[in-house]
Amino acid sequence: MDTAFLINKLAEAHDLSDEELKDLIEDKTSNAPLAAAADKVRREVYGDEVFLRGLIEFTNFCKNDCYYCGIRCSNRQAERYRLTPEQILACCKEGYALGYRTFVLQGGEDPYFTDERVCEVVSAITKSFPDCAVTLSIGEKSFESYKAFRDAGARRYLLRHETADLAHYGKLHPPALSAENRQRCLFDLKKLGYQVGSGFMVGSPYQTTENIVSDIRFLQRLDPDMIGIGPFITHKQTPFADFESGSLELTLRLLSILRLMFPHVLLPATTALGTISPVGRELGLKAGANVIMPNLSPVNVRELYQLYDNKICLGEEAAQCRGCLERRVESVGYRIVTDVGDVKRQDKTNG
Ligand code: SAH
Image (cartoon, rainbow, N blue to C red):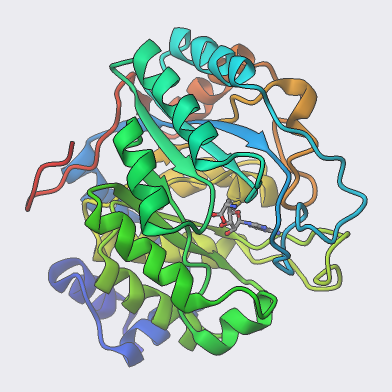
């Protein structure tokens, strides 16, 4: 296989055949040429800018039972918490002072947070911080619920499709959850005018290269504004306790492939990437990522929101974290900006 040929073709055509994609994903030569090509494209579109998203993990109650996730409802050892609207607003206030202009409210699917309660929190944030974007990441809901959140002021929604392959989806989730419904949610969110983020875990149990090719094809159909990928990381209190975590190298390869296929997409160097390697996020940026999503949750609840083991930054105050990140980002030649950080699309504007 001619790696250089595939990289050039991907950079020019933003696509490859299934067979070529599979070869490039499985290529065992150095990641360096692929990362360099991705970084070139990233700099053409986004320069050296890195956007921040302040992540507020506001509840770890969840009615779902995803086999990989530490806050699944069957994990009786997980100590549960939820933040009050006042606590959530305090996180935003702290984040705003540190230059954050996007707040991502993420949580388990917590029935306590009815549509009405979610809308109240979203409206309160948009009222207090009119120059900020509110992003929700609270799982699968009806079209009507998504519409209500949008009307309350939410502009963005993160919902990873997890895996596009129906059989693989069935191996990661209990029968109550389906890939079809998750995908329906994503298309509903697009119809409602959200900026949408999707994505998948790298190296999840039973994942094959063919599955990853299907994930990429699904993303081409969905055409999301953000693609979140990170390694699967084992959580001991789940049915997948004995599976190995996903690899750094494969995650980096995929970040670069995604940057070349979707030049304008927002691509986070995820916390999971920073967890499997002390310089994972820096390497992610060098491989084509342009977003970091630091934790703005109160320090006393951070260790309770453990989707996977050994999550980083559990003890750091937001301000400390901001300084640390700045140094990390600059160490690899990029720059954090105070910006709402909208996607730079050529084909349409986003609001
Ligand atoms: N309840 C929300 C938020 C889920 S948590 C929702 O349904 O979208 C956000 C993401 O963390 C998930 O989409 C999943 O891809 C990832 N995640 C969960 N468990 C993980 C694990 N063990 N390792 C790595 N990533 C994990």
